[in-house]
Image (cartoon, rainbow, N blue to C red; front, side, top):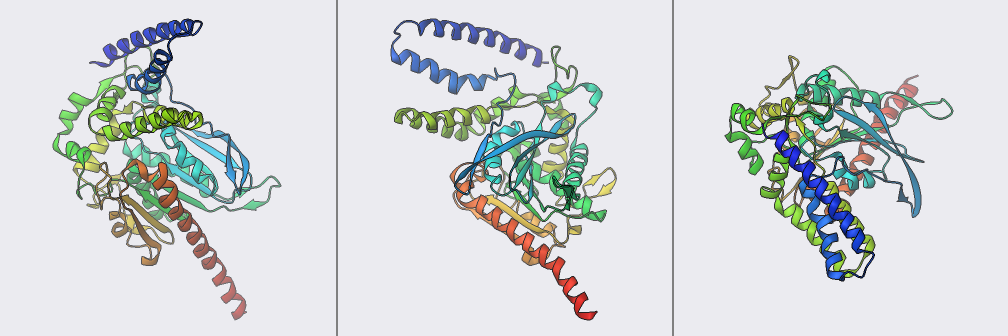
Length: 430
């Protein structure tokens, strides 16, 4: 296996980087040419992240948000810990609803969705699935495939829909809205459907953004690759073993060094756009914009090893057998039936230039969830928007997020009306 060799090279590069940094700091003591200093900074900001030298992803570091024109402090802490994932909560004063943001387990660390979290904090407290690098998970934790993923989300959702108490001990129930992005749409819809089949209370709304719910429709590069290779081929060529030096020694994973190649070869335009953003900020001498651009590069290039079971399950169930759309997906023997969902608002979101998830793959949920009233099922097509623009950047802030806000408000108004109407009729008959 290549993992041990790649890790050894990474350690060599890290040592070289530290030596170079020491030399650069020494050079700062004398008037080195500005061009030399700029080139060194550019290399550190743009190219070192591609080498995977960081030992951990950057922190979210959302200290405050602008709320109603005034800064509002944000408290961040982990509220649930699982071997492969932490549920991280961002809370602020005055929040009246909860938003569960299901970050995709698709190689990127959850911090890639920092901007998404920041925007959703305007709507309420935000909970995000913050994935743990599989190389750091002991073999004793067992496997983590799609079935375990669904069970984990089920537990998270269950803890958030229960009645809560405020600081005075008064019982209150806050509406919960589930927002799933990219790969996470599949297990999120599965978990919610199974909950509905058990008679559990649904969230107020479900938003599915850019996810492969029916990968047969307009497949992209990733979908075509997944469908054209056997599971045996994937296991032999894409799965490696975590070497010594990590808590997950011996665990089979889809490693980050293969994902880095995927980023460079399959989706180069995203990284190029981040480099352009960095260059524009640098040319303007805008320190604030430059810091934001540097952070965006670090967040995008922060990658995690994925558990082999989950990766192979995704290839098999999501892309090859398309089990959810074909109504053949069973989780621990139970058939997943999205049509069981009731009394919940559903919004599906797609970008017309999404090269990751083909047009129609996410909107397919509207037909799958036929038990939801037609008026409560809506879709949004964002013209000229690529995959990452669905949850970051101008299109996210200007079009997608406002659509989510409208869905939140509409879902809560409907639920309140459904709660009030029976009480009124009961009083009238009494």
